[in-house]
Every structure is written in C-alpha cells, then in structure tokens.
Image 1 (tube, one colour):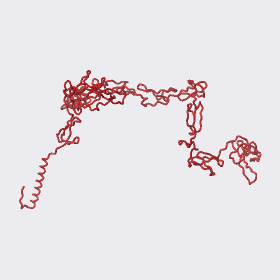
Image 2: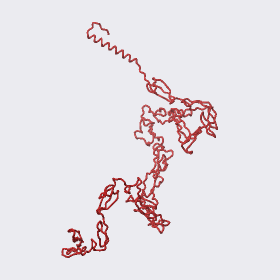
Image 3: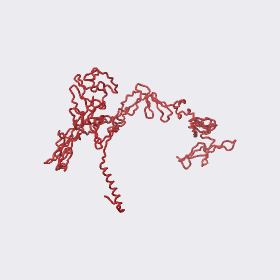
Image 4: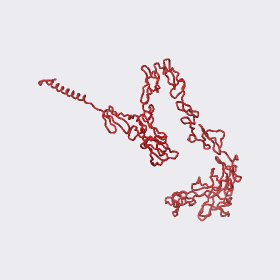
Length: 585
C-alpha cells in the first residue's frame, strides 16, 4: 500500500497503522521459524532430546524422549562360553563374562570361588590353589553357623547374601537361599537359556497359559496378560465376555466362587482357581488342609476354631502363657488343646459349683479335716491354702507366730502396724516388740522416732518458767497438766489421775493426784464421814455418802455427797458445803 506525500491527515493515520501491521507480521514470521528443543536432566547432567546414555552403576540404557527420561535394563545376550570356562559376574560389568573354570572332586567352580577340604583352596586361572584365609569371629553359636557354597569360612544362619551385590536382570530379582544367593525370574517371566539372571516375558496368549474364555481376545502384557472382549460383546468378568449375558441377569446356576461363561445354548460354570467342584457347587481348596477342626473358607485360607491359630490351625493358643485368662487367686491356669482350665491350687478344693474362673475354689481346713501333720505337742492353725503347727519345741514345730490374724515365720522381723517406731520379731512361737534403737550419728535416723536426735532449734520448746529447754517429743508436768513438745510447739492437757481402790485418800501439798491413807483423820475424802452430813427435804440428817429412797417416789434414789470445800476467812477452819442429789432408777 502506497500513499502520496500530499495526502490528508486521515491518510497519514492509515499510513502509520499500515506500518505497525507490517512490523507485527514480520515478528510472527520469526516466531514460526523458532523451534524450542526439550531437554532432560539426570544425575546433574543435561541431555538433549533423543540423546542416549548408559548408567553403568544401575546397568541401564537411558534416553531423553520429549523431555522425559526413559531407562531400561541393559539386555545381556548369552555368554556362549567354551567347555573350559563358565559365565560369571565380573565386578564393574553388567553382563556375565566367560572365565576359566576349575573341576575338583566332581565339583565345578568358577574363577575366585573357594572350597574347604583339609585346607582352603581357590580357583585361579583354571587351577585350584591353596590360600590362607583368617575367618572372622561370629556372633552366634556353632549350631547356628553354616558353610556357604564356594567359601572357606562359616557364617551365621540368616545371612543376607543378596546384600553382597548379586546383579540380576531387569525381570529377575535376588533371592536368599540357605547357603547362597541366586536370581529368580519375576512372576510372568521365564529364564533365558536356563539362566534366571536374565528373564524374558512369557507370552501367555501363545503358550495357552491364560484364562481368557470365549468371545475374548488374549492380549499379552509385560509379565501378564489381558482378556479383551470381541467387537459386539460385553464384559462379564476379567476373563469372559458375552452377547446375551445370562450370568449377569441372574439366570445362571453357578456358585459364587465359579466363573460363569455364556455359550450359544446358555452358559457354563467352572470353579475359579483355588476352588473345586462342578461349577454349581465350588468349595475352597486348601492344599495342606485345615487341622484342629479348622474350616477352609478360601484358597489356602483356614478359619481356626477358638483356641487355635496358624496358617493351617496347627498351633494351640496357650491362653495361660499369653495372659489372656485371669484365674481366681485360689486357682491356677492349666492350658488344654484349644482351651484352658482354672485348677484349684494345693490346699484348696472346689465347692461344687465349678465356676470357669476358679472362684469356686475354697480353702481346705486341714485342722478340721484332720489332714494335717502336726504332732501332739503342737496346735494346728489353719491358713489360706495350708496350715501351720504352733508350738515352741518339737520335731514338727515351725516356731511361727500368729500376729493380727496373720502368720509370721520364725525369725521374721516387721514394723509394728500401729507404731512404725517399734520393731517386732517372731522367735520360737513368741512375738516380741520393742522401740527401735536411736543412733543420732546416723544421718538417716528417723527424727519422729528419735526426737532426742533432733538438734534443730526450731524443734525445741521452752518450759513455761522460761528456764528449761526441751527437745521434740519430750514431756513434763506443769500446774497439774501433762505437757509435751512436738516440733517446736507445746501442747498441754489435764493430768489424768488413777482411780484409787481404797477407802481413804488424801492430797499432799505440792502434788496433783491423791493417794491412799489408812488414818481417816488424815483423809480428804471419807465414806460415811460423821463430820460431814446432809439434811434431806424431810429434815432428816444424812451422813456423807449415805443413800435413801425419796419419799413418795420409790424409783428415785438420793445420795449425800461433798460438793466443794470453801475457806470462809483466813486463819479459820475449813468448812464443807454439803448437798444431796437424787437419780431415778
């Protein structure tokens, strides 16, 4: 497009727009001619598209395909070794190489393999030569040691031979055997020329090793196969297809564990792998059977009855050892085939109810049933589950002691149940209890039991007079009160005077409790004292401590007693205030 120089302003705008279009068209042309190449990155290296490389450490051929790394195991052709050589793995290579072999005592060994006869020999350059090998010390017993193939030193059972780096092909895997490691083809693959190091796919379709039924086409897969329905047919299951699906419509007589195949005239029932029968009835098959009354519920799968376990129900469950059962304390658990029993312990017998947990086991009273062995000079004492002979001497004596309805053995020592500061012991049938000895030099001494060892000032107490210092748990008498120091605090209570079994008593000055006297003139409390009387409501004078029935109320008894002693004036005689009391009977 061309415009004249004298064009109008409108023409100038069109010219500028045309130039922009031409520039954009040239940019698009450049972009169409640009090709972006995809690359791949592996192990820190960038590879171009369709570039190939080898990973020797993994024995794989790899390539970059449209930006994605694809690797496959290196294919190793047969070694085709001569008669005087063997194909063996060589360190640093992926495929087996031919190496000289050795023949010794009908055994064939490859280069580097060893044989232990009287001495250790090794195959080198086609000849057996003696070598010296220092065997390492093993961390297992001699019975747990084995001699691997082609070696001179023992190893422990369970050794991982595959960990030594045996190289197997892409479709095989290393397997530990008893004395060596070997390659084994994976499922769906077979060895090439009898060497399981290299395995190739099994074409189940060609070899007729598939389960594809009518109206299907077998399609081989790597390590497996697939059954595809023919055009116009519908799938019934993984192995069969049908035009008229009688199986899916529920019109078949096939067992749930059978494969239903539609035919021109109807359908066909055949038991699935692992089941046996005519197709209408299919029963699970366990090759080694189910023991102990177990039931085969699916191929090689047993459901065990209660009390048994294991793949074939061959193992009895020891309910006692696995602490699955809690028998009563008076019984013990006895394991039985598939079951258990709580049996009464020695010294106990069942009360006749025979409870399963053994709680019906009761103690046998050997003393009452005369089944003990005590001599005549001893006394039979029944104990839970046994008995004891209590005596101090004699051939059948144990010298044990009865203590708080329990038994302590002769020579046994124990803490007093009510006073932990006292120690009790049993000696020749007698119980002795005494306070523990206090050793103040021992830092572990119990200060509660040994307050005299408490030297802390915070635990001491000051006497009310302020002149005497007492230790914790010390006691004293002050103003007719019993006082005691306990962890720095003083506690006092009224002094309890003993009851006197005498007719006359007197209180000595300076003492708190009265004592008995024989002279009634010295007594402070005299029964029927003629010097102390009471006057009843009828005006009758009664002696001290005298009793009489209340007139008009025979069920009420009155008594004359001294109620208090009062000093009227200084330097005068002491007078007694008397009164009578009454009580109903």
